[in-house]
Image 1 (spheres, rainbow, N blue to C red):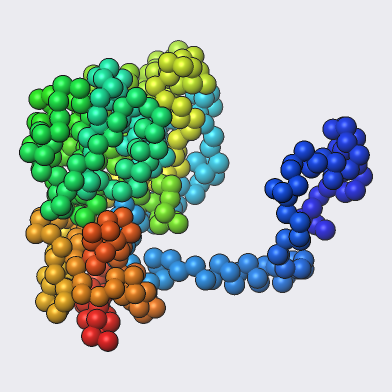
Image 2: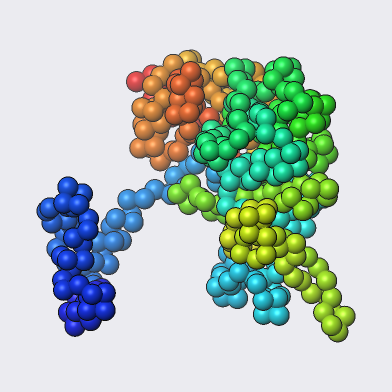
Length: 449
């Protein structure tokens, strides 16, 4: 059995060392009612050639964004990835790099992370960025932990219903045994009304969290929301889409205290929902409250420019219970991909990408609304993603389109029961006019049937 390296002699030696006579005796502490009393339902052993073919057949059942026309969104988008991103990220010195605790042996990795932090600050308009978190949801939760430390309050955390539902679920998990309370502000019109925030906020509010573009794809009134947060002394946390900043105002420009994002769109391919890359940046005054890894620039004993981990107030260093976070690693390889992606596009390339997304999304939006039984769910400005309401069973409609090679969108009813007849559609720069027309025609034909 080539895949089971332990021989009977090995097993006997391990059992003797443990102090038991048999495998059965080893498992005896497990109660009988909790133990499986039948063989596992697995196929018989295969030779290597047959096993390889079997695995390939199973893998072929996966349908990727590249094998269909993809209009999926909700934080994971089918953006174009320049070849240079894969070329750099697949180099062994990056691909196999470990946590850069030893700066003398990690200058390349540290510099790459430093460049990532620099680009995130330029992108978001904030003063300082950390070296990435796990994904967009954990970035929301870590931003709230920062806000608690910044304000010293234990009141409510206000979050818009239009923020990604899974981000809100992550925050609820963090808050389940905490002293603060998460209050979700309803968004019945597809956006967060600043007046509703003003009614809910007071001098004990810890943070106000809004996302723009939000989960429906709409733009929020971020300046007005931030003004309300500042008026009551709460921390304003702004979640943004990195690609959209090619045309939209940056969080730092409308006064965000903490800016967070899911970085998947920055050169990271779609992969089973992630985790991808969590972005977190903040104002300079909150630097020492920031979680995760920070890389700083310095000089060595010969006066040469170099890089080191700095302000490492994390649990496995010296702070322990006073650490700013318990993050033990970072998405270093994915942060590298984002760095190469942004460097390859540059400001003009990012702007062009965002403009193409906006133009193509609005073309799709206009064409779809001409179909009988299709209407816009909300009358709000949007960037590359929008919500439509259809006179059809949405899951069935999406299944029909998927069978035609079109990943048409996300069923909003999964997260918003009141919108069970609605779906979101994301249009990136990769989608052609012909593909958009094909989507419109396929929806028309499916609804007529």
